[in-house]
Image (cartoon, rainbow, N blue to C red; front, side, top):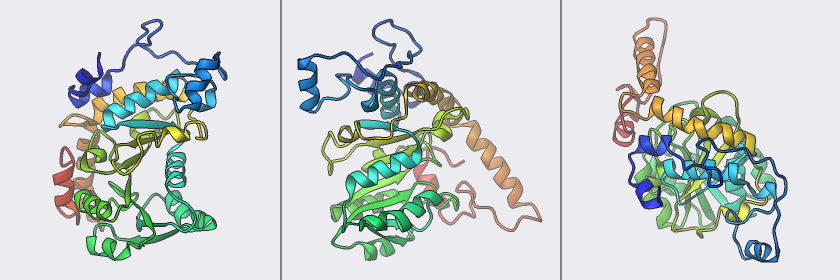
Amino acid sequence: MDQKRKENLAFASKAVYYAPESASQSIGMPIYMSSSFQYDAESYQRVVEGERKAVNIYGRCGNPSEYAFEEQIAAIESADNCLATASGMAAIAITLFGLLKSGDHIVCDWTTYSSTHEMLDHRLTDYGITTTFVDTANIEAVAAAIQPNTKVLYFETIANPSMKVPAIPPLVELAHRHGVVVVCDNTFASPWLIRPLEWGVDIVVESATKFIGGHNDAIGGTISMKSKLLPADFLEQFAGTRWSNGAHRCRRLTPGCCCAGANAGRADGRVCRTAMTLARHFESHPKVRRVWYPGLESHPQHDVALSRFQFGG
């Protein structure tokens, strides 16, 4: 199937379709275990000039098993490029270290995954990179936090664990007006509920361990990009230095896209229907003080969630 036709597929079809392996036409992608690949002077020169996926040299830089997974994620994220990593935290670390240098500044929501907050508040400071934490649901607070050296605005589509849902369009507009790159962690929502790149976000990171994998048998992460602020080969620059996900795990994660799409991608998605049923049950339970779930009318960003997600569950 050519690229244009694939782009025109419905989302559920994108999720379940990936091209057969070219050499054998196998529907299931083979696992390439090679640490090294044979190449000649011409192939090596192509790598020196910037090619990565078209020429295989060394397994750390990637292999066909990883490329198949990356292409699948790029399709469902509406991305121009994707890089598979060893974990969600690896995806976040590679992204931030790729964008920032000593003296740079980040504006980030107060509520993020605990390891993300620790990295921003305690680890990046060792490299001279500072972070201002704000409530990204308050656009005035975000605007006040931006400094001349601010390079990244970081938030989660559904914050872990508070379930906060910041509005993406005003954040993107504000950041881009200042030349700031917008990075979004979409793990809690997954591409089946929202594709932040379609809303103007520059880079989306995901923990593929969760909805994308979905079978509790592989840890992984992804970085997806569609940005006018960054060079087209931004992710390829880190192919050789990334924390690689490996052929085995990518082979497990690729079919996971298909299953997760079946569960969460339809308007009657089972995951969201189950979550809504539980949320309504506990909200009316006399021993439960408060339930935080974007699908409930009592959630402070309920209207934002309804306008953004494909369904209000």
